[in-house]
Image 1: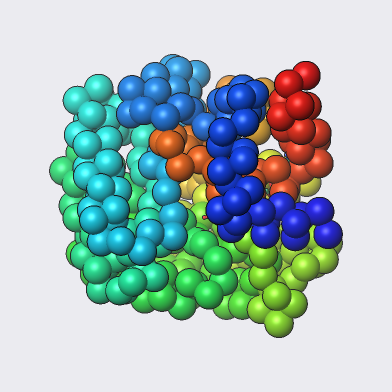
Image 2: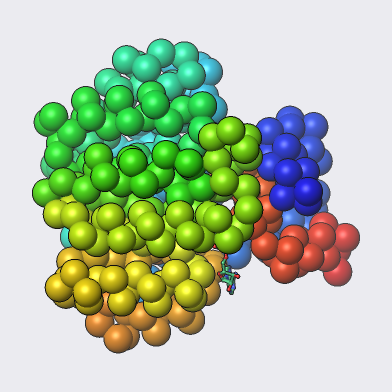
Length: 305
Ligand code: FDA
């Protein structure tokens, strides 16, 4: 119930304005977001890679309905990729891209062309792109764009959301050689007809999907903070003769940082998803919807305590 309210708030302009202008939200935002500028993102990247972690950077923004705004996002990514290469960070840091920020809702071809430019810039910088998966209404289009991009850029990463009833089928289709696939639970509001809503059902689907990806020939990227799913993932990797370089764990910036370092110190590949930029509102609301403890922290900050 609370989750549904927060996910609805994530789409409300009125709530967004109230939260963005509240004087005390900055501290909470900084817990989950690297900062508003490219320099903030690079500083955080340097710190994380110094701790033997890998990074995927998200230039925040979503739901663009203006081609000019989508162009600004492309420029944001190409600048970021140039700076990553110049800073010698591109071997350890890639980028995550939301197609709705590139104009997907306006025109799929425009979003594809924009994403292709980011993939080319990533290749020139010596790194890769992963296409985030958004609201369930965008899944079919995102998979079409992914297939188009992979013709020239087979290294482009995909995302499967375990809460989708078709998740296992998507994993089967995406588990081919060279295919990088991030598996996550799924962060958006979705109806029962297309998604599991019971937490135990979502976890079971996550395990089934992990099994398919680990048995496949691609590169699984397990994006979860859930200790049980992390342990099961490690066990399934071993069972499928995968070494520590044959898959990775992924977690969000600001969530379980001690566990991120513990896994990396044990020899695992661990990638941290680092969002930055001014459009942090929708991202922050999804993080609050995931965990009541995050929400309590946020409400205390809003009240100025
Ligand atoms: P969940 O939130 O259910 O937490 C499970 C358990 O993890 C908790 O019970 C607790 O034990 C532990 N835990 C969680 N948070 C903790 C904390 N702060 N401190 C201590 N323990 C904690 N979604 C999407 O729809 N599309 C996408 O493209 C992506 N991309 C993405 C990338 C990466 C790298 C990550 C990590 C996540 C995403 N997501 C996403 C978000 C994802 O779908 C999901 O909403 C969140 O990761 C939360 O789900 P968890 O698997 O962490 O489990």
